Length: 305
Ligand SMILES: [Zn+2]
Image 1 (cartoon, rainbow, N blue to C red):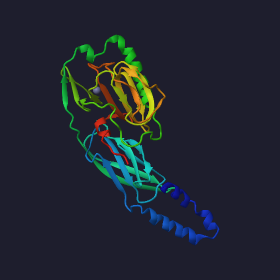
Image 2: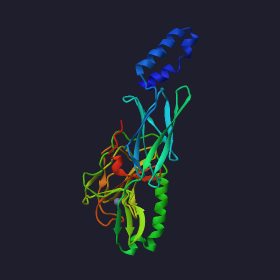
Image 3: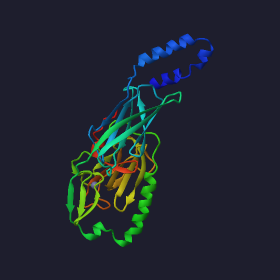
Image 4: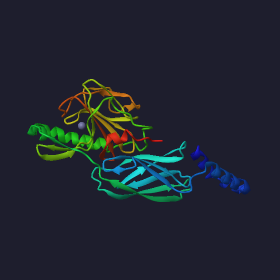
């Protein structure tokens, strides 16, 4: 509604030429007061306390009517979308795990329908995420994959790299992200895994305690960009939600979707299992944003407008 009015008012030239200058001016004035846009920028982040590894929902209200809004954030580009109901712009972004605590700026760049740029900077504080450390003792070949699997692992790394590099330019998701399975959590995101005394990667997903054969559902709408068996991930489904945001579902026993499928929020993706490098059946649920893994538990709590 707002955007339609904006487009209409951005083309008053013909009317002015026809000598209805007075009418055009009064139309503009009444349209502006009717929309009562805030006269200052309002930028909010959810969660309020940002930490490394956290997804973040930005909500922005601009003092002027904009045709588009983008932002630069931690060397990433964010494209916002407009919601008439809240008269606000919003987008989901993230804070990579390796980000050091400190103050970082969200550099907003809006464009009016006329093409005029409107810029605003907001400084946001990022704290240090408190992630537990888990010591695990495993057989050496579990940490170092057998030699004969190395070619396969290398090929799959290329497949994943190519797949994750492609994301829809428009957001495919809407509203809240749903739990992929109704089950308890057996492993949190970010826990430092110390295998046989050596610190390995932090756990980059959220584990759900589900027996084999449990239905696993899409957390939000999107497109299936990966549905195949991989060495570490087992039967793995990845959904692209657009603009670099993706969710992954690992160790499945059965697929119920195939690559290229468009899926709705809550759609059945497959059945849980213990395929790949899993010690027992469980669902490893992961969230990617523009090449970095983020805390799924935080994504599930965000309340987009
Ligand atoms: Zn896991």
